[in-house]
Length: 484
Ligand code: UDP
Image (cartoon, rainbow, N blue to C red):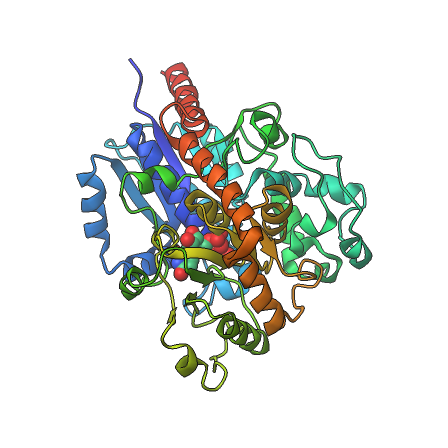
């Protein structure tokens, strides 16, 4: 008999990390795992508030699905008024000290909870390494980035030893400097692909040091799961570079897709979702709308947002624009005079929405995105061509791969070298035209349709991601059996 499996899943309290981690938790709960889902009080409260429900209602919903699941929220040690996402460095620093609190909640005796089989940790939570060691259970790392980026990040200290890091200004500008020394079958990497926090200009900032620090702990693992799919990233061999001491490293994504395909919710938002936009989308022509959104953290100057607004106006397409209240570098934003009036018949501006539902709507024809990994994977899975406009972290690599490796999108020249480069309204307009009409669009649509099909196949029964996740479950069963 197989003893009950119990995964402790520790989520990073950021929108782009929490959502895939929650979807992974559900995939494992569906496969019979008892799940202890740990996150911080701050994000837990925000998610419940955004969904207008209390913890009891959430527990009831999850039990109705037949899951064995408990949520645990621990304090992150930051003061209540701290912005968290507005100072990721400080948040990250606080997360490094979560270990003792995590360990103490996991060692409370509770007879209704099976013994822990493994700790599944977001790849940026170094604190879980010590906890897994103290509890004597395997540490499973979950990457919410693509394989190529994760391989760079895991090997950041190696790249430092070779002099590629800190990334110098002249290397960023050089188009032919390629890095080919990384393990795993990933395409050659450019200096602009390396995590932006490791650029020379950030060398004295806390985020530079933290990125290198976390990299050490990304090399402590017994199993590695990645939210990507093999058909996108060079087959099974691509993930080899993420193995730690030969442990398995497998692609299991897109993790939101199984829920989505079965018509269930697969989005856990930190902001209340605007629902009016779906009625508006219903009234638009098929493939005619440009969706504009820069994820949960990217910021832009007011001057840049004005150029963007005027470019959107000039291109003439209907557009749905997610304008987070803090996007203008935290200040309140005044759009160009008369802009709202002039575009009111073909534009809708909302502060947050259910992006997956939007991207899957038939009226969406293109996506102007900050190239976060979730947004990229979601657009690919829904077959939508993109314009990438990266802001930080892995977004530069995602954007370049979308354009050069997968050929499913375009970008704005020069923003990979200087993320603050002003993109003029003329460039915005002409690039939007290229993804919304003409021969470039046709090619991009063909390519993204192929990848969409591959993504759907990967998560369905018999698909690569589906099978890899089942193998993971079997491996955890072996571990649980060996302990009896
Ligand atoms: N998202 C959403 N509604 C919005 C904007 C974004 O649901 O109005 C979701 C999006 O679907 C994605 C996540 O927020 O799952 C953003 O993650 P990503 O990795 O793209 O970017 P990040 O926010 O981490 O920079």
